[in-house]
Length: 200
Image (cartoon, rainbow, N blue to C red; front, side, top):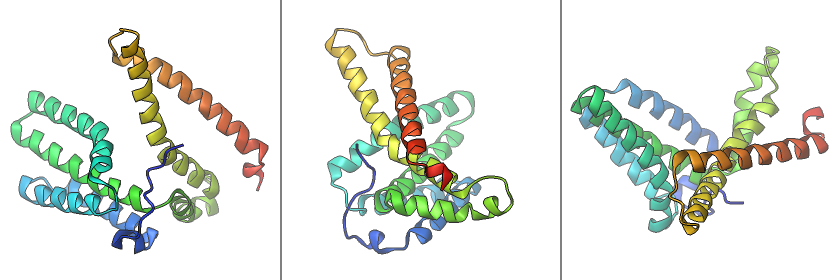
């Protein structure tokens, strides 16, 4: 299976995972409080600098950005049609900054580190009797872990349809993707229960 984590020894890798996650949360709040293009543009440039210094090759870094950029562009176009050019530019810069900073964090924090930090952060919920911290950590780690797998499977389905002479469409591609993803989810749930993780 693929992973978003990049094994390198950059300055970002040497930072504590907890610090990177806290900074990401702070940046996420900050960019949603900003509503002017200039500071949001500076934030996007800072995010770009962090992202492209996370140890990935340029080709790999650009390939990872494609799905996010497609979604962000669609949101910006929708905003342009129904609101204003200024609002569309704000949405474009805000979401781009978030995507770049989040991409830098996922490239420099391993799944194990991510799971440990989320589990620790969820401890107050466990003490309050609302949820098990280990379950929240595992669920969060699985979501991050399967993002590249789902994207890769989507591309494989689209390529298979194109090879058969079928024009790839959202409905015809998403349906088998959802079925395959749910099947994998059942297999993973069975494996987790078989190992007694939830009983630990």
